[in-house]
Length: 311
Image (cartoon, one colour):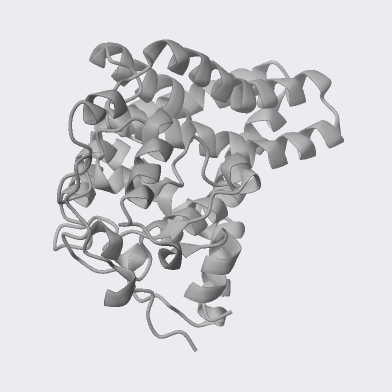
């Protein structure tokens, strides 16, 4: 039975700093400047692609208006919501577009709000996460704590996610925030009320049904898997190898769970100013320096979840 997910000292070689990396693993200039470059032009195409795989999928299901189109749309929207959410995370870091006004407008209205996320509030709590992972102000401490857990406990968590119980708690919190006058929550509620009303008026209510159902079930499941694979069972430390896991990035995982390089999560926590396109490059630098070793890497998300749940 697995008793800890924390790497041993033998898996954490003391090889930093190097000529290219400082003592924290961050790149030195000129490499750092290269890695921190935001490719706004290519990100326009990326956002359009994400919207096509989310809004476009939902719209196509409504246009076809058949049972199989709605079922297929429901399934594909699991990945669509992941894409919107991850790009919203990129916008929260102000790394999607170099123009901050464009970054925040697109991040809020096209990426975060459609997926029920208050971007500005999320940014504040998420930066607390980056300042001191697993520290006293960690906003997701309850989510990450206690791993590894028994397999039956994991199944209960998955069941709550897959049946919409977890999503209901999110919606209840969103509604309470809107009633309390939180502006972003009010924007989100209004946006979705208008969208649902328009779809009902044109005779396509199932478009919104598959949108909210897919977010409430498929995306909730994949989001928990991703979150636990990032930090589950880790500890507070200035060494990010003790706060963040390393998982091998397969094509299937990158399509459905960790799009836009978010699976290179240790690199993201080493330097949260590196945009998503350059995270694999920073990861490769950490590997080349000997700081990230093969022993730290889990071969797949499935292997990690088995390890983390004694499954």
